[in-house]
Structures are given as C-alpha cells and as structure tokens.
Amino acid sequence: MNILAFIMAGLFCGFVDSCLGMGFGVTSASVLITFGVAPAVASASVHAAEAAVDIVSGIAHYRLGNVDIKIARHLLIPGIIASVLGAVFVSGLSLKMAKPFVQGTLLLMGLYILFRHVKDYNPAPKKSMTKRKAMLLGFVAAFIDVAVGGGWGPLGTPALILSGEEPRKAVGVIEFTEPIISLVAVLTFGYTLGFDKFMWDMTIPMIIGGIILTPIASVLTSKMPRRLLGILIGLWLVLLNLWGLLA
Image (tube, rainbow, N blue to C red; front, side, top):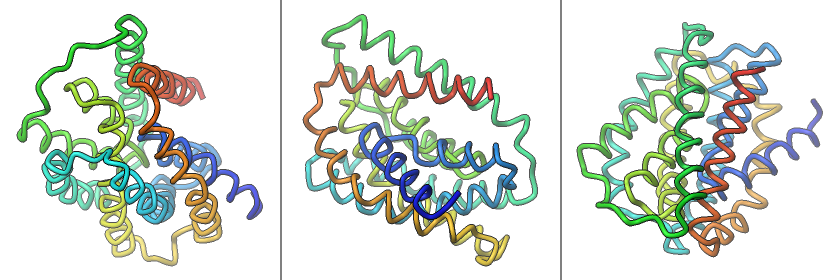
C-alpha cells in the first residue's frame, strides 16, 4: 500500500471510530494481520496512530458534551494497568485462538444491541453503570484492545449502552479515554519490541488521514437520534466481526 492508501484508510477508520465509538483499531489491525504482519507489531503500529487520532476525537466529544467524566475516570485506572499487561502478553503470543473468541462475543453483543434498538423506539433508561462494573469493563476492554489490536471501543461502547448510557455518551466516554489507553500501550510496546519495529510508514499517513474527519464525526454523533445511533453501532459490530470470523 502506498502513502495515499494509508491516508485514505486513516480517513475512513478515523471517521467510523469517532462516529460510532469503535472501528479504528479492529479494522486496521485485522487488515494488517491478514497481510501477514505479526500481531504485536500490528497492535503497536495501530495504537500509535490511534493515540494521535483519538486525541482530536476525544477533545471534540468533550466540547460537545458527549463525555461522562465520572464513568471515564472509573474506566481509566484499571484500563491503564491492563494496557501494560496486554502489551507484554501479546509481544510473544500468537492470537489465532483468541481472536475468534473475542470476535464471536462482539458479534453477539452487536446482534443484541441491534435487536434492542430496532424493536424499541425509546428504550427504557436503566441505572448508570456502577463503579465496580466500570472498573472491570476498563480492565477487560483494555487488555483485549492491546492484545487483539482493538477492543476498547467494540467492548466498551456496547457495554456502556447496555448499562443504560445514551449512545452518544457511550461513544464520547470511549473516545475521550482511548488515547490514554493507546499511549500507554505504545510506550509499553516501545519497551518490549523497540520503537524501530513500529510500521511508521503506515502510522504517520494514517494519523494524517484520521484527524481530518473526526471533528465532523463527533458532531454527527451528538446530533444523531439515539435509536439510529444504536442501530448503526449494532450493525457495525455485526458486519465487522462476521467478516473477521469468515476471513
């Protein structure tokens, strides 16, 4: 792939990620691994791009009022710890067994979210996620995110929605916290693999492409009806993980 192709990939992944709260990591990492890139190198390179792109996305969502700071704070500390552990874990591991399990789980979550929002025009609000559940979610989502190459958004966004968070708030929290998780992963991979192993010829063009449309995507998220956003998130999870399982 040439530089223009990587810029276009970043443009697409950044837009989808900022709009739906997921997609940058799992899409990019899946493509790289399919083309034979080692899982650790793929995850390291993708998170380097994601850290930069999601800073722009996180700021945009925060300014639009899409971020629940209380939930974000509960997610972050265990997420940071799990990010380090995930990077160390994947640095010497093949993920042929882990990926189908994760993708199958995400597919089921996507189907449930899709069913819930197609069936119910105005889903009854539930109590917000408890501190303990948010901390557990932060740990599991961060570990899988770094170990598999993506997962903070695909796990975090639907879990927050299913706990009763508004879809726009779920997306905002994930986008606001993701650059911190990604940065911790990048620093850990830099230590375990060496920064010279990163695919910088891919990472830098993807950053350039990724930051262009993320502010526009965050505005769309804040304006989009709750039901429509929930349907789109469910569809994206189903299509992305079905493709991953069948590839």
